Length: 189
Image 1 (cartoon, rainbow, N blue to C red):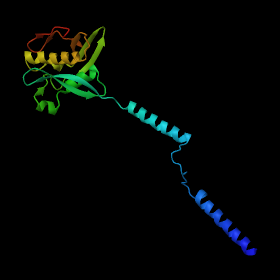
Image 2 (image 1 turned 180 degrees about the vertical axis):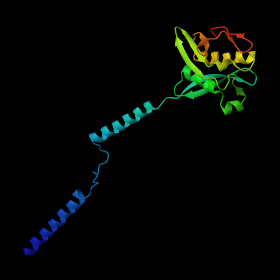
Image 3 (image 1 turned 90 degrees about the vertical axis):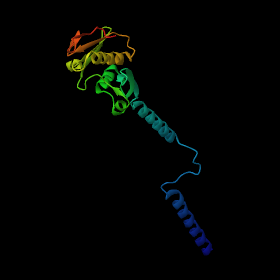
Image 4 (image 1 turned 60 degrees about the horizontal axis):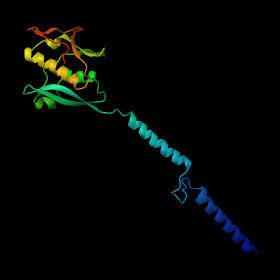
């Protein structure tokens, strides 16, 4: 009987050791049925999806706006610019930057001098006022000044505002421009 008890004790020790090793000793124990998920795993999945949706909504949307330049044939040429903020103010700023190198290589140019700046733009009382620096009127002849005004007018009109557009230089409404004293009819459109 002594041998039998020793054999049972050894078997019990081996079984307990095996149980401890297999079920308690492994840190990354996974159940055999991996298709079952816990409530916390499902919650984590939905939280991750919601986070991804929030990040997508926070990414700025790219919008397009039309800018009016001139072409080699001395005709109007619209270009599209992509921006995160397609406002009239942004469109005038893009117009004043002039055409890109690519656009210039394809015959697009601006009659507006490079150093002209937008002082302010107002949309009030049913009209739009574009106030530029005085150097807008310098350089070029009558046709050049007419094309500058056309570029401003058509860039504003591309926003379908249907509002009258007035041109100011250094805070004053323009009546005459350039060395030849060209009369500027207001509103421009």
